[in-house]
Image 1: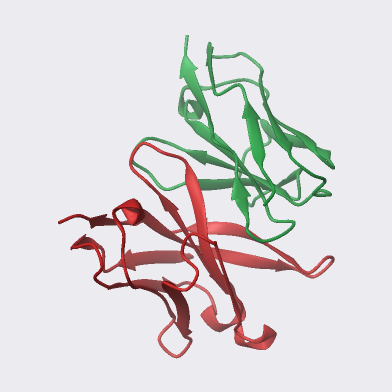
Image 2: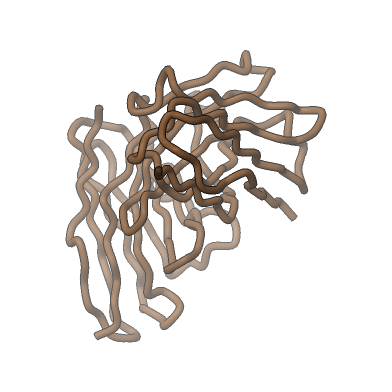
Length: 107
Length: 125
């Protein structure tokens, strides 16, 4: 199975900050990587697919990059509604696997 | 508007069975693959399984942790995906989400777009 490792596991940031989350795959997955946002008590929301393509309706403050084994999710200017847990997921091969999550908290 | 609504969760004893449903609306259900993802209390996301559309054989894939115990099926006439869970274990306790999976023609892979709100399954004696 492909292991997905996110860093950091949590971070504290202020409104307006630029935030970057990293996701590393245990083997190459080309660009078959997605990012999700989950708020407490809510279902996950799809943000990005194919490492850098925004899902419909997702604001452009979110961006993704990377290929192979190393990927990043960047939030250009953190807003109150962005405080949540973020997950990466590989869909290169079965079983599809998720990172352990990165919790973005208010500083 | 795309909507996915899960139902069928509840409290069940270890070793028993439960069937979850995911009722879809707002799109042509039969054209899409569907998947189930679960989340144990306070934990991260875990992929459970996936069913392709009939156009791609309607075949399934499963995580090792549920293979042989869980079965995903679909009724395109009713726009419903099912997750039949047998021989339930306490470690199957989780919120179960259904997701729509989009087929990316360029490479033959699938990725999630829409998620349901989830249904809680508690396995306990």
